[in-house]
Image 1 (cartoon, helix red, strand yellow):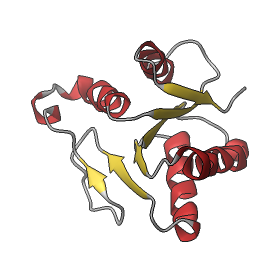
Image 2 (cartoon, rainbow, N blue to C red):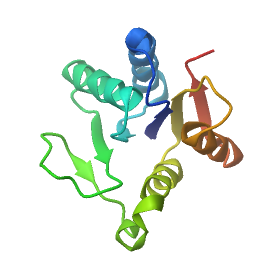
Image 3 (cartoon, rainbow, N blue to C red):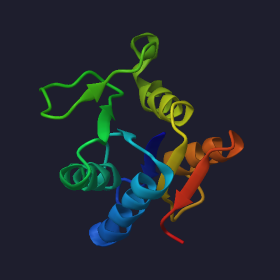
Image 4 (spheres, rainbow, N blue to C red):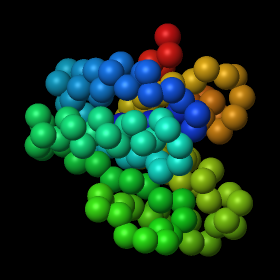
Length: 138
């Protein structure tokens, strides 16, 4: 099972523990073993940090940072550049990447505090597709 994350780029680090507990719940109880992470903003950074920490405890889990743009410098973590994104205009690259992550995930962990914006848009898409969405804001 796969999981991805959507949250606001200005998310407070105060939710870190709740995010980590939610990820660990999915690992232990729902057999989620692979995670896709974006790389824009605080929420994505927290998700990555949680996964790095949880991998020590659960070495069988894997994760990939899903890129919207080719990186300027290499990253020490596994990355994925979705097929077809190279043909997408740059201004639509993040949307293309986010839709790809929804389509390839069974679970979505979100932190949504506003009813507008990119994070909300892709959580709504996931819900329309019948994905399991866990909003840790609630």
